Amino acid sequence: MDQFHDIRPYNDDEVVGVLENLINTPDFINTIISFRFPSCPGFLQTPLSFAVKWGLKRQVANIKGVDDLQVRTARYMERMIKTTTTHVEYRGVDKLEKGTGYLFISNHRDIAMDPAFVNYGLFLAGIDTVRVAIGDNLLRRPFVSDLMRLNKSFIVKRSVAGVREMMMAFGQLSDYINHSITEENCNIWIAQKEGRAKDGVDKTDPAIIKMFYMSKKKTSSFPDAMKELNIVPVSISYEYDPCALDKAAELVEKSTTGEYKKAEFEDIDSIKNGIVGQKGKVVVTFGDVLSDGYDTPEELVAEIDRQIIGNYAIHPTNKAAAAIIESKGSTDSAFSDYIKNCPEELRETVLSMYANPLMQQLKQNTTKEQM
Image (cartoon, rainbow, N blue to C red; front, top):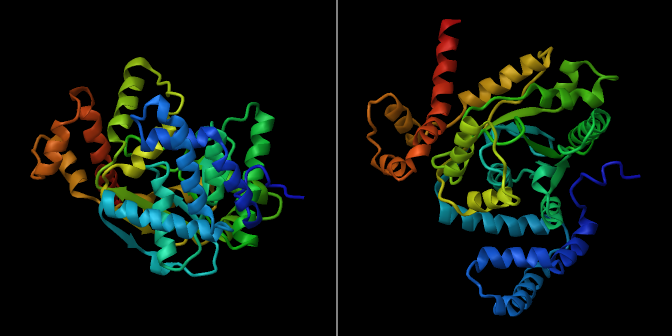
C-alpha cells in the first residue's frame, strides 16, 4: 500500500493521465489565458481556449514520465534566466556526490524560484533534481496541486485542524523525507521555516528539525538520525526581489493594523511575479554537509543558520540599502533610482529588506571575532 499517496509527487506511470486531465480542466486553461492574454475580450475566450488546449497537447505529446517533464522545464528555466537575470552563479555544487540523497535546507525568498534555481544547478551538474516541499496553502486550486506534483513536489499539510491530525500529518511527512533520502537516495528541498523571509532575516525554525526526527525517535539517537539525512544548508540570494513591494506592503499593513489578509489567489500572483520579474544577479551557494555531533535541534539550527548567513552572497543592492539607512548615501545609482521609485510609505521597509542579509552577516562575523 502506498502510504504517501496523498502527499508524494506523481510517478512516471501517472504523468500522462494527469497531463490529459489538466488540459481538460477549464480552470487551468482559463488561468493560462488570463496570464498570457490579460486584455482578452469575452467573445474570444472560447476560440482561445481551443487554441491553448491544442498548443498544450502538442507540447506534452512526447512527455511520458517525470524526467521528460524536467527536461522541458529546464528549457523554460534557460529562457527565464536569459530574460530576467544578468547572471546566475552556483557555488559549492562540486562538493556534492552523485547518487547520494541530500536534504537541502535553504533560506526562502521566492515561492517557485528558490527550488527552481537549486534544481537547475543540480541539473547542470548531472545530479538528480530535488523533491520539493510545498505547503498546501499554495494549492487552493486543484490544478496547481497537479502541476506541482508533476514536477516532483510533495505536500506539507499545514492546514490540518486539531493537534492529533497535525501530529499525524507531520509524522507522515517525516516518514516520507527520511524514506526518500535513506531508502531511495533522492534529494529533498525544504525551506528553513514556513513562509518566505519577507523582511530578509534568515532564521531556521527548530520545529522543522524536530519534524525530521519524529519518524526516527524510537530507533535512532538524534545525532545519528540527522547524520543519515545528509543535511546541506543552501543560501539563495537575488540582487533584486521581483516581489519586494508586495512583501513590503504586507509587512507595513501587519505593523500598522496587526494583521494581513491575503487575496484569494495572491500566492499564485506571487509565483507569476517571481518568475517573470527582473532579478539581476542570482547566487546559489551549497554549504557543507552536516556530519554528526549535533546533540539537540537547537545546536543543529545554529549551524544551519551560521552557514546560510555566512554563505549568503552580498550584492551591491544590499550594501547600497545599508548605506542609505546609515545616512551615508548610495554610490549605486541604479539602486538609488529603484528606491526613489518605491512608494514612500514602503521605502523604509524595502530598504531594511535589502540591508538585513548584510546586517546579519556582519553581526555573525562580529560575534565570531569576539569568541
